[in-house]
Image (tube, rainbow, N blue to C red; front, top):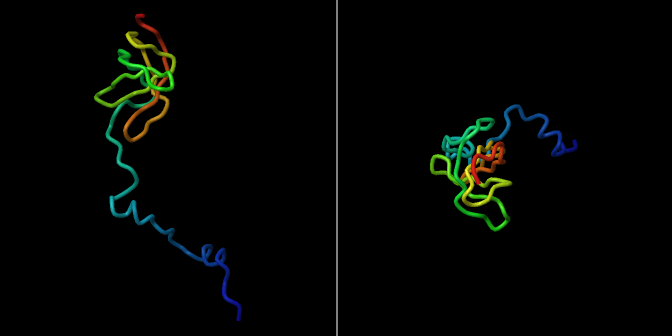
Length: 96
């Protein structure tokens, strides 16, 4: 009798395997609760990153803001979240 192929073995498996690295931590990456998406935040841009985005902080977390310059005050919307930083875009420019 021929041994089942890898695809057949995977199809027969009833419970998906859990990634051992996430099983030890109790789940996938744990993010600290920071700026939720789709909410406008008023920030002051303090610096410029190497790729030309403005740098701001929201609740202590670094936010890279596309379309902002140092010294400006802007209303931003978070577009993506990461473990150590967020990315955002300018919605309204408050001061220059």
